[in-house]
Image 1 (cartoon, rainbow, N blue to C red):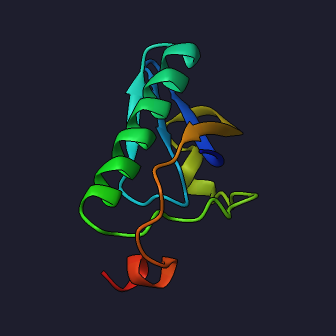
Image 2 (cartoon, rainbow, N blue to C red):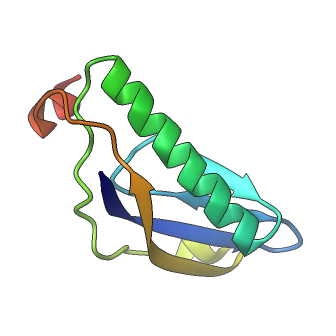
Length: 102
């Protein structure tokens, strides 16, 4: 099964890209190019979700549809790219409420 998670890519001044998925706290990645960043973020998300499922936690819902930025988010950032990323999702093991409580 696959699902589309919202991801945020940030291009840092004089540096590389980083990425995160608001619906999956703690799952981040980095890459030298946007193409590499997208591949690395897909791998990070799939690995993170797989580990959650293996440990008996629920898979976070892909619910975010937008991101709120603050002025300070732009201090060291050239630009952000926000898009949906299709990732493989393991079978759910518990409800989303179980994930939040853990």
